[in-house]
Length: 427
Image (cartoon, rainbow, N blue to C red; front, side):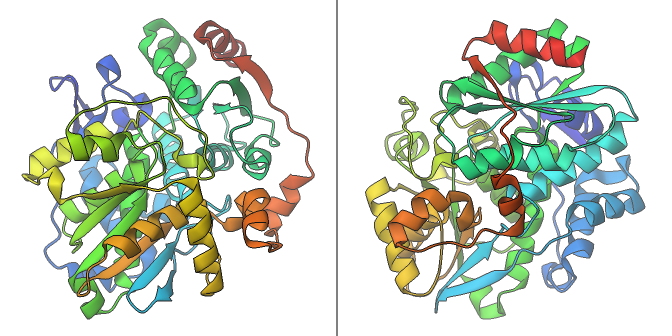
């Protein structure tokens, strides 16, 4: 598999190099030079989740890893389902929260962890990642207790739910968590600064597990195929998918699924009031505003890292950005939508509610809708319980970590502090 750096096209790497590097020169993102195209989609959709995903990822990776190796990586990573649940006659929810940390990010993080362990061959690696909520837990649990791999996770102190925090800040061992006095964009900026420091990057074997890492995006392509496989032929004909979007990795994966042959009519980029992309699609001006804390905190991102990949794909495929649906939902409308959904019999959480509201508003009569539920409602128990006057039962994984002690250290949003901490961890 050959990939190129979007910012410096002359930098070209293999899949293994891209997984181990994360970023390219000038903090550029890697993108596949060629994309496979599956002609017999019906045959592919008729397979089981693991077999189909192995075929997709083998086609993407090429001969760099054997078919048997890819099958083993997928089998170890995808040990949980991605079921569809009907919410209305013409709308389904794709529930992506049945993994070990109750988040869609389990898929990408676990495949990345399996891939990196296979490719690093025991060499020392330091994973540095920023999280606005769910990435931290998924990455922490995917890499927990792996030999020769340390994980450092930056998150905005006080701006993620307590249960989200408990799920990944209580592990210890090779998992190191930092509560940053700032917002997610501050955390993300410090990750970029670390990767821009060539000496630091080399000395500690730096890598990132954010959705900038191509292995995570590739894994996420697979659950879009799994979703469509559960629909009838009629429902597939005019399919619209609404994706709750923060850093825009999830939407990038969906668009890549469409690019390699999955029959999706159009997508809706659903954000909260951190609406840099919706405003850009409406006005043509890229003007990030200060990040605002919302109920759907995992989407509190004003400068989404993956947007350049989306623009690159649209340019490559000759698609127009005007084909992409979009919209932003306030907290007030999110609360209203959660209540409507609950009264209709479906328990959701803020991120899924944002995607559902825009889908319901923009879905046409002849279309079938699908929205992504990216996290279990219990991860937002503090807010959802109050909104719905309902006591959500904690799944066993959350109940276990709820009573555990937080092990995070606190740092200011200043890169020298993070750099020194990374060096201490790697000693």
